[in-house]
Image 1 (cartoon, helix red, strand yellow):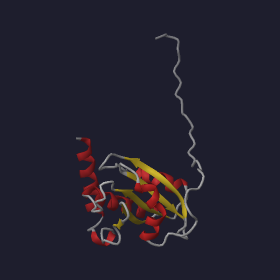
Image 2: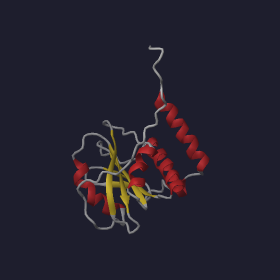
Image 3: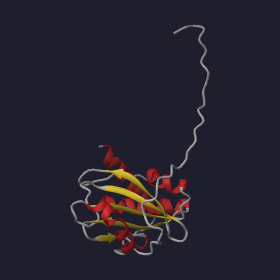
Length: 174
């Protein structure tokens, strides 16, 4: 290194913006898991791997956009709250619906699906962007975690969610 070369601290200024894509979905309001399924069934029916995404919604329930959060493998798609809520914040979403497919067509939620639902529900409460539902899509059918009782009313509290999230992170690092 040259002795006379000076190092100057540099602070990069960045900007974050949502890149708007052409609309793919209808303008009608989503008022039930069945409506979500009907809207997205064709898109997800031919996928051979798990894909996780978020529907960002207006206050009225109309879809602002769909954001693909994770392209996974045959039986897993890793989704983290920071990726899930990024597009929601940038879209000024009033609420979200989390969904992913099960290519196996077994709609039973995994332990990871249930833990993710609880983490996103809690994060949504903190951010003021509530999670309305987590829907698992299969071939010709769906399953709503809210309708099956896996959301909010079924869990013991925030401490349990934080503990489950920490345990899940440790397991993933192995």
